[in-house]
Image (cartoon, protein in one colour):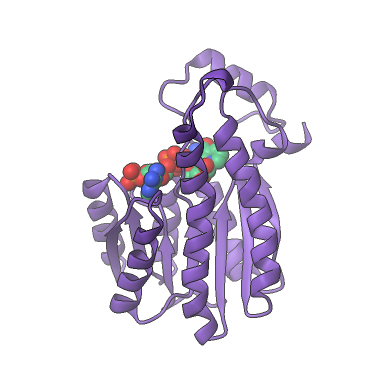
Length: 244
Ligand SMILES: NC(=O)c1ccc[n+]([C@@H]2O[C@H](COP(=O)([O-])OP(=O)(O)OC[C@H]3O[C@@H](n4cnc5c(N)ncnc54)[C@H](OP(=O)(O)O)[C@@H]3O)[C@@H](O)[C@H]2O)c1
């Protein structure tokens, strides 16, 4: 897919990895919807940065735990840009919780944000993409789904579901829409993780380094413009953790 002039929604793109993906797309000439939930100011800053690149950007707020917000996000995108070519599902909830203390609410908020929302966003975006018989969807997953660890059960299950969603959407939406996934390893650490945690991460990372959001943005670019002959693929970008 040639990227110049295309329109992309990037969820959770006011900060961190989503922001890097949005900026990378802006640099390639893509008009970008900066979706955010609580990070209003950061979203406005990303919009300004992208506008300075000579393309258009708009910030759209929406809590993805409420499915009704998803139609609004897609509707506002079409009002502004008249089409959608690309959807990047990057927004995510990542909270710790002991298995014996997990509540129905813990379960619902992770599954709703990380799995249900990507599906309904894909469904709404696909309606617009199918009108032009072309589109690309990239789901940002997590390489740890194949090596689960303790205390993050709803998160890890939601991301495992997102692998399944990537495969099934790829079948459902072929041949016009390609659906792929990127599974990051550690590219931006949680702020409360200390040196002990970082040493433990490096121990199970063959490339012996922490990645960067740019590694994820570049992998997204490959899914979008690197080839149109790939769908249903889930690419680990994790310093080799999945084979350790
Ligand atoms: N960081 C890593 O090293 C790493 C490793 C493995 C996988 N990943 C995956 O890569 C993606 C990006 O990672 P990240 O670390 O940048 O993610 P993050 O900081 O944990 O979250 C990204 C954004 O998701 C949005 N979000 C959370 N709950 C939401 C809700 N209910 N409705 C709408 N938006 C919501 C937040 O937006 P607001 O700030 O606007 O509230 C947040 O800024 C995620 O899918 C993550 O699972 C990241």
